[in-house]
Length: 307
Image (tube, rainbow, N blue to C red):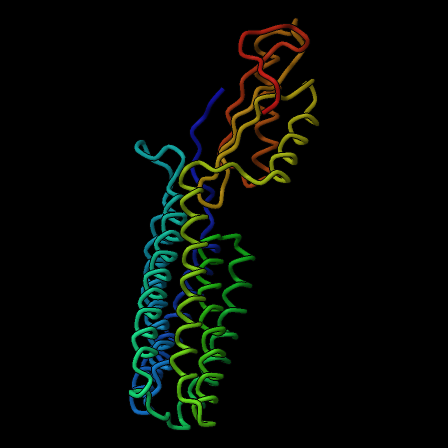
C-alpha cells in the first residue's frame, strides 16, 4: 500500500531557522569587516584568514536561507515526497564552501612560510579583534545549535558547527598573534595554516555525510529498530521483514513487509496496514511508509531474510 503525503507543515520550524540564520548574517557582516580591515592594518595574515572564513559564513547563510525557503514547500506532482532534500543539498554546498576556503588558506599560509623574511610584526589591536571574534562566534554557535536541535534540522546543525569552526579558528589566530607579539613572527602564518586545516577537515566531513544522504543512506540502527518495534506492536501485525529506510532531508522514507494472519479478509489486512502506518507516522520522523502485506507462517516468493 502506498500513499503520497505532504511534508509536515511546520511554520514555527521555518521561522526559527530563518531567524537564527539572519542573526548569523548580521554577526558575520560585522566580524568579517572588522577582521579584514583591521587585519590589513595590523599586518596579521591569520586575522585576515579568519575574516575570509567569516565571509564564507555569509555565503553559507545565504545557502541556508535559500534551501530553507524551498525545503518547506509541500509535495507536488514532480516531488511526491516533498522538497526536504534541499536541506541535504545545502549541507553539501556548505561543506564544499568550507573545503574550498580551507584549501585557499592552506595555500596562502604555505606561501608565507616559504618566505619568512616577509612576515611582519602584528599590531596589538589584532589580538583584541581575535578575542572579540572568539567570544562572538562561540555565543553564536551555542545559539544556533540550540535552535537547530530544537527544530531537528541537519542543515542548521551544519551551519552551527560552521560557526564553531570560526570560534576555534579565532582561538588559534589569537595564539598565533600572541606568539608574533612575543617575538616569534612565524607563528602568525602557522596559525593561519592550522585554521586552514581545521576548516578543510570540517568541510570534507560535511560534504561526505551530505553526499551519502543524497545517495539514499539508511537511517541509523536505533531509529530503524524503533520503527520496527512500532510496527510489531500494532494489533494484527505478527511479524516484520524487509524493513528498509532512506533519508529524505531530516525525514525518513520507509518500506516494510508486515505479516498478518493468512486467512483474514483483504479489508481486514488493509485496516491493519493503515493502523501500522499511522502509528509510525505519528511516533517517528517518517515522511511516508509503504507497506506490503504477507501471510504469516506461509511461504511467499518475496519473503527474504531480514536485511
